[in-house]
Image (cartoon, rainbow, N blue to C red):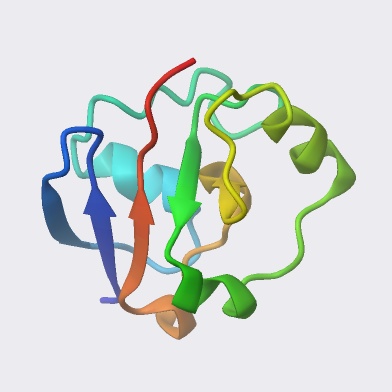
Length: 105
């Protein structure tokens, strides 16, 4: 199984295994990271699954949609590598992907 490296808001980093074919959001929630709210359940209609992707991984991700970009604009913690984790399909190609959960808005 591919691995996902998650850093919490408190700076604690943990590596978890994730199933291919689900979103990064689902991997994070399935690994019991409580601080990722993901209120819309992956419908790309809120920004509560916001993560910062490690810079080295940024070029490997598909471009974000206009809707995702608009939703991220609502976050005061948006960074150059911000993404909605519900919009990142998890696969073996992303084995080792590193993300950080930013502070909540």
